[in-house]
Amino acid sequence: MATGCGQRETVLQQDAATYPEAVHLYQNGCITCHGDNLQGGIGPNLQHVASQLTPAQIKHRIEVGSGPMPAYAAPGDAILTPSQIDALTTWLSTKK
Ligand code: HEC
Image (cartoon, rainbow, N blue to C red; front, side, top):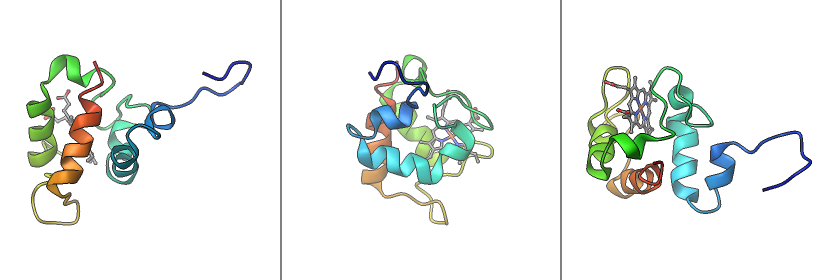
């Protein structure tokens, strides 16, 4: 962690080196609703999502969506490939 610096890194900045694909996908598709610190907004806070949901449940949520959240496994503008959904699931499953 940098010290003596006025700005704190966002969760995305902290995780970009370890989970580059997931962070990139999140920046493109999820940040508008879940925030640059996973703090939520239109969608819920995801900072501790893995304490509430299993990896399978996280993956399912991304695949089928809910309410305003798109179903990312369904054909359409928001579609992600299975490996992209896996990358997001692996990353979010570390958020306990
Ligand atoms: C248009 C806004 C929107 C976008 C874009 C969006 N979400 Fe969501 N997301 C939501 C809302 C709203 C919920 C809560 C739905 C519910 O509870 O029925 C949610 C729920 C979730 C949940 C379950 C959280 C919980 O505590 O139950 C996960 C995981 C999630 N989103 C991940 C993602 C990921 C990953 C992306 C990008 C690929 C994404 N979301 C894009 C709005 C959005």
